[in-house]
Amino acid sequence: MKNVRNIVAAGALTLALGVTSMTVFAAAKYDSPQEALAGITGKTMEEIAEERYEEGKTYGEIAAEADKLDEFKEELFEQKKEIIEERVAEGSLSREYADDILERIEDNQATCFGNGERGRGMMGGFGFRFGGGRGNGFGRNR
Image 1: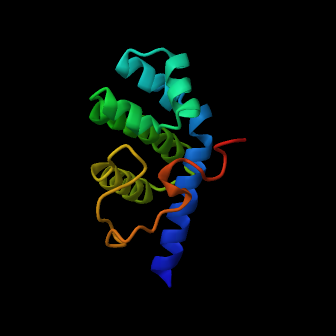
Image 2: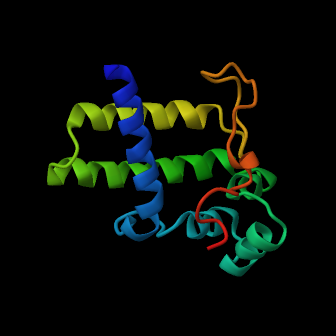
């Protein structure tokens, strides 16, 4: 039961980080995933927005097409790491829990192909995805 609570808590924190990440990137090299992608690929923010919203591509797909997926994933990891470190510094997250979250983010990124799908993970690759991998979850079209 303790493991289930930890998994639920980790999921809630990951969701919270995702929701707040657009406003907390103050010290990161870039201020948002879109800005990071533009800087890494050399495309304009408008070009990224067009590919993302009009063509329906994920940021990862755009990065992969530019052969910059690894750089993009590294930058996103750094942005998330900064948020987590801020939470540790303010005392709302323990160092141990922060390290666990960072390890899971790295593990997930290792099997991320940039298209919303991942390699065979803990569910054995049986297609347990929500939103079809296209960002069709909460917040996409709001």
